[in-house]
Length: 488
Image (cartoon, rainbow, N blue to C red; front, side):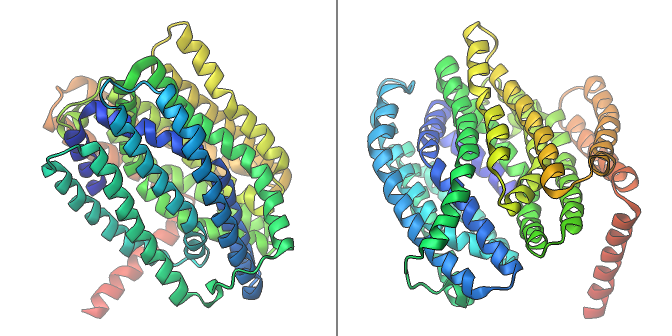
């Protein structure tokens, strides 16, 4: 997280606000064209994990091979769409400063190559997650962070067009990461052996799931990239740069929660595959609550001191970046809370009405935000609308979990909603007092951060966790200490 924040700062410094905004919005266009791959990625992850839960490695191999073939076809479709519709959109509708259109087109081509690579990598990535080999992410993740740091330092001294250089060097770096993951899967998992034989029954099963999931995927992409394009239309590259910086901070802060959810998601799916509905709901509630707490303990001090942190972090702070950061972090808290529910619903395979209802609510974000911006509401309105609809999506997911997983609404309120509401409400009081009664600077940053983290940690332990969860933590810490002294 720390390296990510530093590299983001140096990228903005090296590219400048305008080129940084171009990099974000151009990359967003190609992301919008990958909606089908997003749906198929979820399907691949779900089907592979279910087969591991059923302990059927023969069927796992059938699904893996079909996933590879399907993603080859998807890569070809995305390439055609990107070089026709996407290229036309970039050159016709995006607000690119004069003299930078050529560089924007080069970056677009680099983004296309990176996207194609990501599509082809999906079955291998899904296999690592399904097998829960999380140590691979630890090692490769560390290498990736330090590798990007080295690339940023090279960017700082590159004498020519840095925007183009950064786009292509990121593609080559991702190519290296893909090779590492692929070699690991082939050597460690025998069920990932390729024979590329078409299996119509597996294809039809995955296609049916993907068809309904695609509706939700499209809605999510339109929400995310649509907001980015709206901000480009109404605020230009400067607004995109501010949002890009905010998303970089949010992405770095969410790293801890993302790691936790990557570890717990296969367990949720495997419990459902084993027909253990009670354990599925219990793990859903626990992971929703803990995911929120993990993000909140870091997000609170960042939201409190966003202005000063950005001044320390960036050479040139884009206007409104601090405000955008606070809103996006709040949206991230809502999104993190709902992620385990999404995994649980996907495990059932019965996603038709879930995707229709929740996807339709997400599709309303762009027209609502557009109308408000059109009548001259401030630019941050688009982000506020997005956050509110994400919260609405969480409410709808709870309803569907009750219907499809027999989740008790009373249990969810008592075990999840009530603890996070009390902890959040009590946690902000003293940090807000410090924020408004001390002058901005290092002293306030240190005091606010220490106080925020301590208060949140104490409240989580005493109010947010159950007695069983507290005992699990204490037992785990004691066993780690004993193991440490025993090895010495």
